View 1 (cartoon, rainbow, N blue to C red):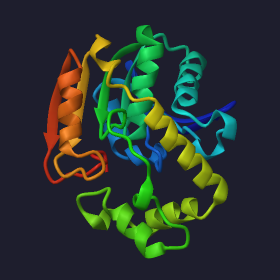
View 2 (view 1 turned 90 degrees about the vertical axis):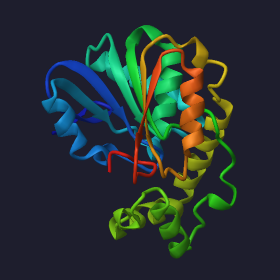
View 3 (view 1 turned 135 degrees about the horizontal axis):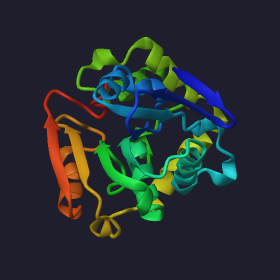
View 4 (view 1 turned 180 degrees about the vertical axis):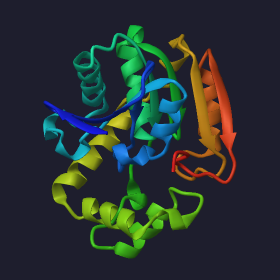
Length: 232
C-alpha cells in the first residue's frame, strides 16, 4: 500500500474522488491507520503523502514549502482537485495550500489544526535527554495516555535528541507563527468540516470555536473522550 515514486512516498487506496491526508509535525503516514481503509471503503481515493519533515532542506523549512510540496504531489498524481484532510500541522498546511491554490481544493477537513494560536515552544519543547518529560508530553497528545506506546515515545525521544531534527522543529514552529491564517480564513469559500477532540490539550476546544466563527462555510463536530489526534 505504501508506494515510492521519485521524491514521493505515499499511501494510496480506493477509487473515487481524491482525499489527501496530511499528518502533523511528529507524525507520519502511519498516523492514519484504519482510517485509510474506512474512507477508501466509503468510495474515495485516499492518498497520504509522507511529508518527510526532517529531510526538508534547512533553508526551505517552512509551511509554504510543504504546501508547494503537496502541489507537486498533486501534479505527480494528475489530480486537478482534492479534499484536504489535515491534522495539527497538516491542517495548517491545508490552510496555506488553500490560500495559494484555491481552485485545487474542493473542501477541507481539519482536526486539531494549527493556524490561529501558535506560540513559541518554550517549556513545552521536548528537552534533549529527558525521557520522562518527553513521555509525559507525548501522552498529553492523547485522551488515553496508554495510546502513547513505548515505540511512539522512543520515536519522539529520538527526534528530540538529533540536532538537525530539533533545528527543523524550531523552524517549522516559527513558520507556523508567521503564517497565522486569521485574516485569510474569512475569504475561504470552500466547505470545511472541523472535527475536534473535546479533551484536546494541544489545540483546545476554543481554537475549534474560533475556526468555526471565522470560516464562512463550516461545520463543527465534537468527539468526546478524544485528544489532539482523533484518528488514533
